[in-house]
Image (cartoon, helix red, strand yellow):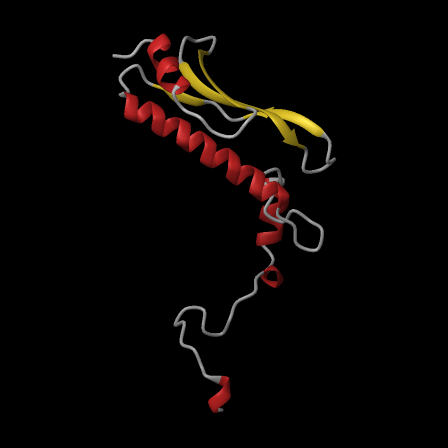
Length: 132
């Protein structure tokens, strides 16, 4: 079983982009978790310099070093996907933003007019327009 200090020791061996830090700490209930902080971020809405923290990734004392490092990788992957979804724009709007209201999305998804499909979406049969 790994102690909090051993978990942090494994995490300290990880390197990623400048300005990223990874910390292992405990919540008020005593559960260990991993969280990254990015000190040199740019806010996708304002364009201003900012910092942010990732979600918390809870760790078990029964995890091995490989699982701890895997949690750090997952933390980075999820954070980068989050940023990608914020920064990706279509017609100036972040249509894949992770901050969109789920109730607004449910309303949009309840309307048949919100969906666009190709005729061959299920079969994926391609018709060669040059031969017709």
